[in-house]
Length: 71
Image (cartoon, rainbow, N blue to C red; front, side, top):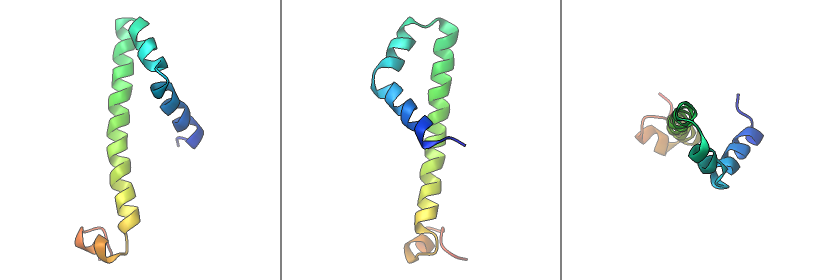
């Protein structure tokens, strides 16, 4: 499982501009790896959003309206 520390370090890596700099000087194969990583990260972020929504609205009236409440 990803730790909060690892996630924070990755966020900092992207926000600091270091990732962009690494990308600029990387070879083609490494650039593709970096883009694949970002694509996978975005896919995981979508799943995290869906999961958070289900957890937040589980067992609530609003959750029932959206199909995430008790059945």
